[in-house]
Image (cartoon, rainbow, N blue to C red):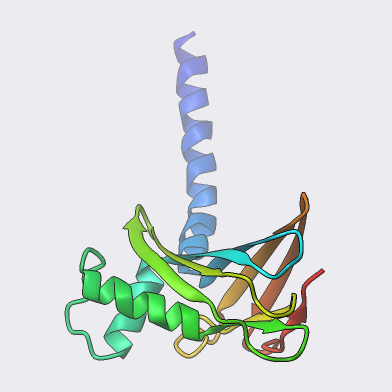
Length: 167
């Protein structure tokens, strides 16, 4: 029984060591998520951006903040304005939707930025995002769009910045 226990521990340690490179590379990926929940008529939306803290800190440093502090209201406000400026919601008539910033908070390994659009003159038709692409060449931004119980997903990279049609 003691040999079985010892062998099991060895296999578990080997499995953990084999998975370590995957965990390290997963942490170094530059990925943000945005969730857009559309109203039935697509004239209003609730938007939540989920940004990694390490990318948020890197952005603040690139903007000249020597000691980024994600508990600072000022630094969270800078991140919220940045996320809002780097996300475009385009209406059916071709104009940009007016999206207001509701707030931002740091929680765990992420910064959450909240926005909403209310009663736009025409339905939302396209969306684009370039969050962190100015500091990370390998940045990937995913947007999940929720509308009438359906979910569609979009992916944006440095090589794919064009606005995508909202289904």
